[in-house]
Every structure is written in structure tokens, then in C-alpha cells.
Length: 92
Image 1: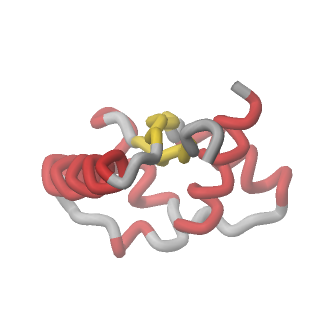
Image 2 (image 1 turned 180 degrees about the horizontal axis):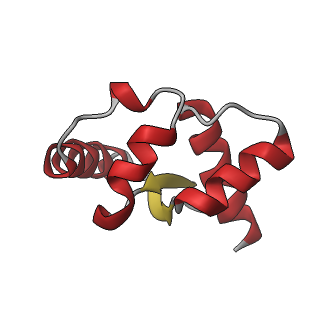
Image 3 (image 1 turned 120 degrees about the vertical axis):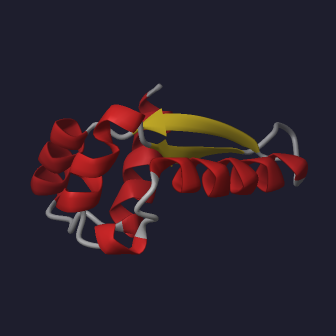
């Protein structure tokens, strides 16, 4: 591999977490506690980094994400969050 691979990691701010959980198609699958989500996500982030992949946290803001989902015709679920993060990473 010539250059390190990069992945966008959908990242939620504490102040947006409850609104996002309520508005996501799969929000009920997310931990009820932001702290629990944060610990699990940071652990996954470290595992990906250990494999040699650069991880870039991409903030998911409720209104911007909802607008993007409407524009792209996607349901606001995990797959859409991953695509949103990848698109944000590409856009710089």
C-alpha cells in the first residue's frame, strides 16, 4: 500500500446524542448512555488504528445529517452514517 488508508468514523457530540438517537432509523440500537457509546466507539477506533488505518472522526450534526439523507434519499441509519462520513472525508 502506497499511502495509509483513511476511514471516516461517524462521531456524535454529547449535546447531539439524544436528538440523534431519537431521529435515527436505528437509534434504538445505540446505547442509551452517551458515555457507553463513547467508550465502545473509542475502543473500536483504537482497534482500527492498530490495523494501520487512519481514523478521522466526522461530526454528525442532526440537522445537517437529516438534510443530507433527504437529499440523497437514504434512510438515516448506520449505512447512511458511514456513507456520510466517507463523503465528508472525501470532500475534505
